[in-house]
Length: 312
Image (cartoon, rainbow, N blue to C red; front, side, top):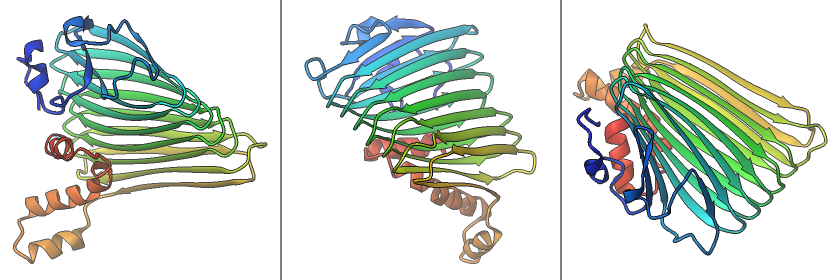
């Protein structure tokens, strides 16, 4: 997807990055102010006065054999809608360690897209902490192509009533990659909603570990909690361990969770081969069909096509 001869001057021509946005670039741990129109210094406060309405795009790129650290804090004030994009590109033997803190105030809405690409010897470790206040909404999608070592910890506190958190994610784990995904959703107020749908295609000798949990206290009411993890396993050498969990003590709750790990459906492969479609093409068609539910959540058609081409 990206080549290791990457230079900062080419960044706006890279796949996934070619759209109008308020852009902040962190290259090998250094903020590139010349590409930022917001005077970013690690903390960004968004309100009706200073928000242009354009997406805000944080781009973190590393191609040096050292640890790069980045910390972002985004405070979204009341009754504003914000589009946030975070892109991480880890090349060569580089290591990115990142922490993102998001505070979504009363009545605010945040639409957040994450894109990750790791080469075979690269490492990315990421922590995301989210606080969602009353009548606030956080909807996020995430797309990962991992050939290296990826670990992401996601902690969400839904602290205000009539608020929700929705996550749709897709990962492609290939070669000898290691992928760790950890998500903890805490319902701390009544009349709240959370919905997680994670899908992955796991190939070659890659290993995936996923730990998702949701919690709610006994005195809360009107809760709706959902978490699902679906995996397409395409190799006998690949490994997936997934641990769904719910610690829900409330009585007025609708809670659902599910885990599915399966290989290709040989009946569907047989059906397609009988219609003259080669096995490799049939496999790609089934992968596409499996992933479409997540990719179709991307509204921008050109971006969606770029993601499908580079992630699947």
